[in-house]
Length: 187
Image (cartoon, rainbow, N blue to C red; front, side):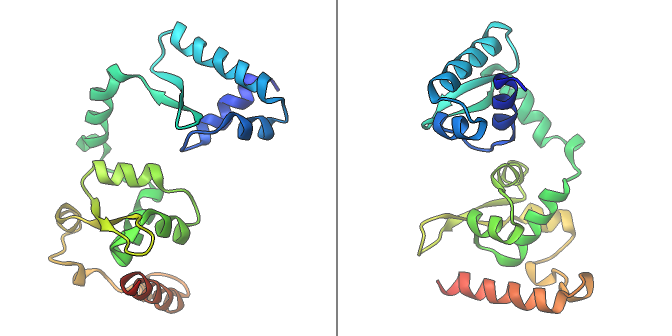
């Protein structure tokens, strides 16, 4: 396995910038060698005028789209052609709907995975929005929007179905979610 292939794969899977030291540890290579390879990869994407580039931001490396495709990406993300939500987006939307206002960290905790990209997508599509900040942690919190209610044909959040009949062991899960919501609202 080549060093550049391993680095590209790691960077592709990451939702945030990765410091050279972390990448070096992941591929078991010296930091200087990894930094040199990252500069080479960045040069490759720039030289070949690709739609993505490798950039150093916030103390680490990450893939980003090139600026001149922003309009295409925005149109694609907000078009009716993208009306279907992924399973990850549906799960994240459900967590927000039942626990709102809820922080990204709490959503990730409930789902057990990083939700940064999904939260961005749901925000861009107008289904959730920033609701303020958590009083304890200062983290941004999210809530559903009127568009969410419209798309689901609901008059209000009170019309959301109970979870119990929909999931196995749902009574315990609904009780746990209720407790989490109380904790979120009382903190």
